[in-house]
Length: 281
Image 1: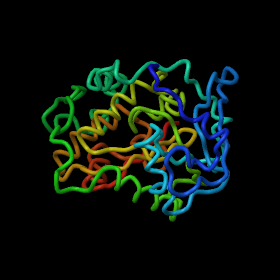
Image 2: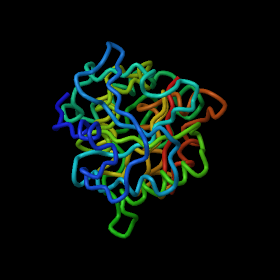
Image 3: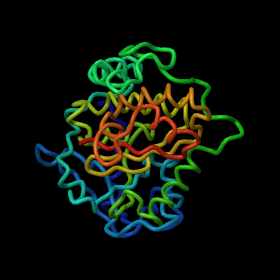
């Protein structure tokens, strides 16, 4: 995929991160270039050796403006170890900007539509018939009076660190990426491989969610993803329309495990929610 100049090698000679414009030094950490095919030709990410603390995310936000590094929390306590053991595949990723998000979702929808709502007695509800792709949900974008998406991402990160909800052991990481939505593809993350082989296609959807809902990628585990949401749907109709996108993006979140639910039930959880969590089996 297309990449920007990688500033991470600076941390090899300046582990404090001062050269990146950080006002507070980084905690002890490491650069990793480990992939499923051996060492990558440059560091993929930096991540801390110690668990993240509240305020850590906000402290590194200057790195976004000065060096093109984006923060993300990595869950190294979910039984799969750290990113060195995740079999990252940066060489297999395309570029998110080369994909149309609606085309990606419509294609993925065809793989889940035969046994979606029609099999649950919900066919015919809403504006689309059974199995029909309903199109993208609302496109108004984050409201001017709503929270700043980057500030909200820091708040959600702090809440995940403090509560450890759905995260075993979150570590701060810095990734060279053009925008938050590109972080999974930039490191070659393979969490959704059982659903989609080229994660850059899902990153194209994340880009669309950035524009429409003020989404930011906040946390990654071996096969789970947490995003903050500055402009969530406010009505049941809007939430149910969006739930179709989520079903195409990550059907396992809705259909599998102890939280299996119908699309209508899942949609209600999206109303006013400041974060979305996805996991792939």
